[in-house]
Image (cartoon, rainbow, N blue to C red):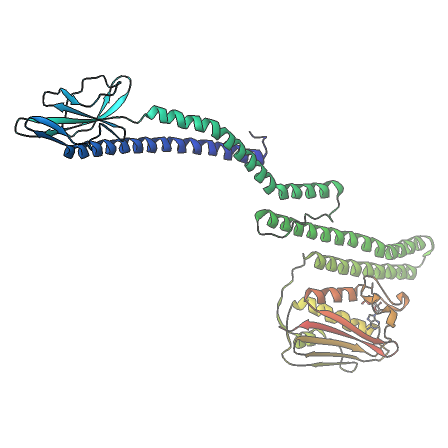
Length: 443
Ligand code: ADP
């Protein structure tokens, strides 16, 4: 039983239930029909005997039987006896062979050995000492016969009926379990091929299987994206760390061979330190982005005043090369740490790629639907054909012109904006400057 499939177990259980139910129903029916039959026979007997009373009379010691009197009515045999219990009229049924004593007005069951009869006697007095007994006899409904007939009908029809029910039940259960088979197949295929792109994709529905499939699909989706970002992290990290690592290796080999004075050693150590710094920055940024992508970095959304946040983030920038203008009450839903990171990335870039002694402008304002944060510089600008590419990881317009950056800042800016349901746009003219605008929904 343990090894049977759920489908089979369910079908067997339902079939057994049907058999028991059918048995119970049959017994109940037999019981009911038996008592109904007996009741009917009794009331027929009573009616017949009573109605015959008015059709018999006595005239001058002579028994007069009305023309309407019938000795056999509705299956009831009518007999007339005198007061000495001698049969005056009527004919006993052939199988009624017993001598049955007379009892006035009581229906009895008389067993003749071969058949059972219901008997009712009524005493009809004509005078003080004269009168007749009217006896009605009817065959008691044959219980055994009814049982036999019913059992026969049940024996013929029930197996067919139960077989049909079992087959139908199995077919329905099998159909109902089909989605489960699909879920199992998809999960097994994903497991065997280690390909997380498979989806169960059941048509949307409200039953338990559709919901289970949807949950599984969401889980596969999450697993796939987390697996992809981990793969991406490993590829990015190993690719980007290769350069500083080989610089450090080269510097160490060179120092071992040629560095003689403490000044030489000092210079090499400073270079190694710089490269280690680059590596550490890179790893921190990459980890942060991967965590954001995977959704493991906790994000605390709360109502924030974007103007205040921008002022706090830029508190360290000096007043001569920097101006900030904020409208009041520009409220957004956001994570203050993430939005501060976004603002700083834009402002740091504005300085990094700005003119010598150039200027950086930050402004916060709002329209009907959007909160806007603009970071503008009068720096080198970005050529039109590069403006789409700068958002991709590690992309740098001119690798030689940057300092410690790794090309991750803007891709993080876009990621944070998207996490807040917003976007970042860019307007830039090479030689004149760039203006980055963050659009967030107002809360
Ligand atoms: P990083 O600054 O570390 O190189 P980012 O992702 O922040 O990486 O920027 C990508 C590239 O976009 C930079 O290398 C730079 O060439 C260009 N860029 C970003 N901000 C500006 C800006 N304000 N002005 C001009 N170029 C910019």
